Length: 353
Image 1: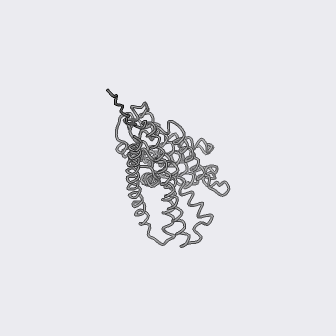
Image 2: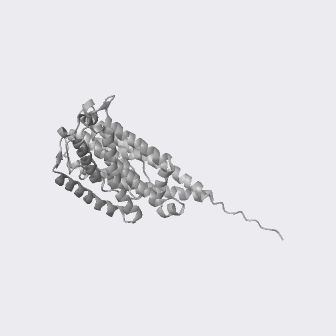
Image 3: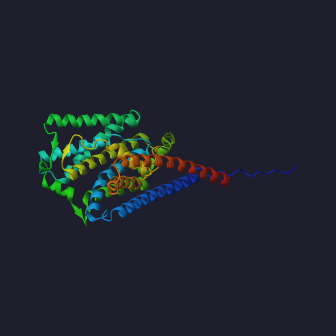
C-alpha cells in the first residue's frame, strides 16, 4: 500500500499579515499628506499670481499666527479621533482657558508667563478629564458627551464672567511680559507658531514611536480586538481626552497672548474647524488612521484658504463651501483607500497560501 502525502496549506502568520497591513497603511497616510501639501502649494501659487505680495514677510507672519492656534487644537484632536472618538468641546475649553489665563494675569500681573501657560493647560486638562471619564468609564458616546460639555463649559465661562464683574479683559489689563510673548519672534518666525510646531512634533513622535501612542491606532481600528489583546482601552482613551484638553488649554493661552482682548465668547464655533482640519489632514473619522503632521497640514490648508479668498476677490462664503467640499472629499478618499487596502491584503494572503 502506498502512503499518500498531502502538502498542508500554508497560511501566513497573522503577525506577518498585520505587519504588511501596517506598512501599506503607513504608505497611504504618507500619500494623503503629500496630497495635502501639494494642494497647499497649488493654492499659494494661484494666490501669488493674483497678488505677488501674498508671501511678503508680514503676510507670512500673519498666516503663521492665524494657523498656530488651529494647529495646536488639530494635533490634540488627532489623538482623540484616532481612538474612534471626537471632542466637540475644544472651542469652549479654549474660551474658558483663555479667560482663566487673562483673569489670573489681570489679578496677579507679576505671574511668570510659564506659570500662566501651565495654569491654562491645567484648566483644559480638567475639562478633558471630565470628558474622558464620562466616555471611557461611563461608556457614553463621545459625540453626545462633548456636545453637552460644549454648552456646559461655555455656560460656566459666561457665568464666571458675569459674576466676576469683568465681562471683558482688555490689553491694558494684561502685563507687558505676556503681551511681549504674544508678539515675540525668533529669526522672524512668531514664537506662537514655533510652540505649535513643537506640539505637533511631540504628538507625532509619541503616536509613531511609543507603545502607548501606537496602541491608540489599535483601539481605533478594532476596540474589542484591542481589549482582548491586553491594551487598556479605557485608560488610553481617558489619557487621549486629557491630553487633548490640555492642548486646548494651551491654545487658549496662545489665543489670549495673540488677541489680548478676551471675553466669554472666545473660541465659539472653532470646534468644527478643528475637526475639519484633522479630517482634511487624513485623520480617518472612523478611527485607526492619521497623523499629527497631516492634521497640521490640514490646519495650514484651511487657514490659507481663508486668507487667500479675499486676495482672489472671492466672497468669504466660498471658504465654508470649500471646507465642506474638502471634508466630503476626504471622507470619500478614506473609504476608497480603506477598501483598496483590504483588497490588496486579501490578494496577498491568497497568493501566500
